Image 1: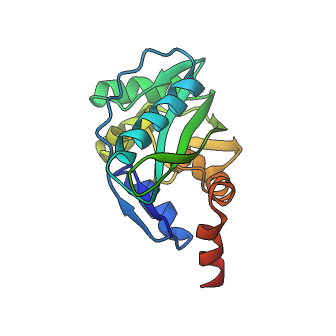
Image 2: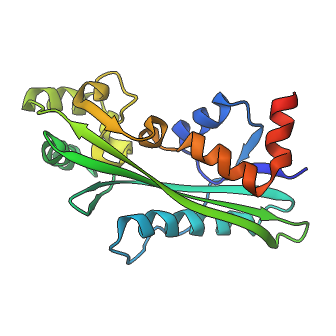
Length: 201
């Protein structure tokens, strides 16, 4: 049976996959993230495809999982902040507003020659509503260091970051970094044997 490969070193995606008992290996992608696309959904999907295809070339008899998550405010992509000043600016912009979290996912199945024989691609979108955040709350959050490795400068799963979120419309796990339920269904469509083995174990 094909082995699962996560083309990411994200600890959040790793934890989510472990949550449902999937046996998988990690093979981080080295694909370039320099993409000239304005549409956020196409941006996330294209980068997910690029990551999966780069890893697929090295992994025979595998199912590669490529993913990319972006935070979008007014159709503008917010990447990971480069410093505390950028983190403060991002969180100030998100304060009191609704933004979208979009995760593009690409599943590629390879044969013994590392040729791609099956694929599925999709994007999941979740709306996130922030309450009005006070400056001293943002500063406290930034001092903890959490914003620096997250798109949009926050993590909904963080002890303090969770306090910024008033409500969401959509998949919570997508905001964490991976749409687990949709992934499960798409993986089943790609290769039912992988899911059947988990259920019968």
